[in-house]
Image (cartoon, rainbow, N blue to C red; front, side, top):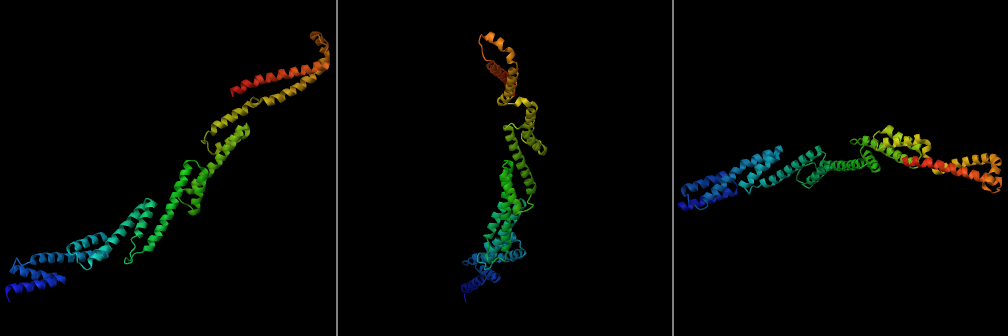
Length: 333
């Protein structure tokens, strides 16, 4: 057998070993061929490829070790190196895909934990939903626990949003809306954060607001004692409530004035009393002055007419006297 035929036979044996992934045998045969004929076609290239694929074997073994330990990042790193050296590896592609999935699951769980520590429930929900999208039948993972955790995160997200809404109503002093929202929170999760304390404050503010509106109504009706009492009740509970101190001072001032707050209508009633008194007085004395009055006026009027005229004059004088005294005090208010 000639040398050329012997080399051809060795090359065919090397290719068969290569196809069977028997890297040591393939490498030895190819080295033997190159030792005889360094220019033998494809021998050098096939040798380099066999050597590279042989280097993939320890990498694959290390990748499997990391895979079994659950060190997904290193497992992915080693298996990716295997695929670069040996693209036709029979087991590496599937293992690499699984390792990548486990690495992604681990990463998303870590993100969810981080967001949960910060109480960023919206991001927790988004992350867990992304995690559930990775469900694969081949992966032996407790997906039910993720679903349960997602449900809990969604509930906490709803509570956080309710608490945020209630806080906004509280800051804007929308007591009715704040009360409804805090009560809903207390109903859904008793003891949630500081809801109980906030509820107490809201109810107190509602009571104070009601008292304040009541006091304003009394003040507009000039019912100073009732207005002062209502403002005083507010002051005892919250000394800094709106302008309650100023309103109390104003009502107290009105109470001290007493008659200064009388209206012209009430003055008319008082004047009418004076009119009756004047009528009796003048009627009693009219007879004594009837004749002199006749002389002065040069008219012989009946004494009853003189009595009536005197009474009317006394009423008019007293009414205007009271009115003159009332107006400056009213303008001073």
